[in-house]
Length: 292
Image (cartoon, rainbow, N blue to C red; front, side):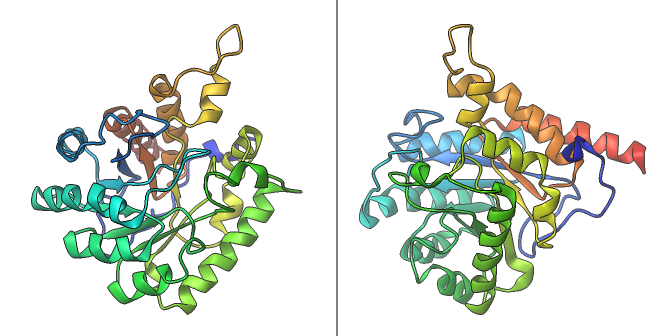
């Protein structure tokens, strides 16, 4: 019953204004934060973030996703001024270097500044719920918009991880968020969905979503999936004492899931280690070629 592992020979989705290589896109994560779960603030200084992003580009990242706010459980939000201070210099430098940049933010004001600095996609983990102006702003700017399933900020979300059927409810809630995005004026071919793994989800919820992604395909939209280094992988790979594997040592498991996702023609994966995941996508693409 491994539905996610089947080879899907349908044409992969494309989004206007973004790379279209005919395979699953690999989006490299650059956290310009002091408290990211995955890297502990290694790229907090703009120069470090820029250098890291250039390394990800050299490894083959199709898009660089720049974020200035940690969304790990319990994280405290920076104010708008601080978020802008973190991300805008990085976006300017990367755009000048030829990168396709995405802005990872929940604030419409940050989107406006980021697009002016060269960003070409909005990755809103709140799916328009954190800032009422977000969707209209993305529509006015004419940029692709990632609409993620979300039930609250980092200090609230895990208490809201209660579902009768996580896949059915995520699909229903995402449908409402997408309908609102379209009403706000975002073009139908510029909306991307994200099931929000780890956001108001337990480890078991994440596995259920991965097993039944075909039910989210029914929305008919490109899908971005972010599994890289997440806690549910750390729990899967726990040591003999039950201690989760640390985030930086979950990349092999992340790449394994990227292979599965690329086999099913998922539009994009969001990852911390680009080389391993580009290799995984290449393997999946070769298998798809043979299956045709």
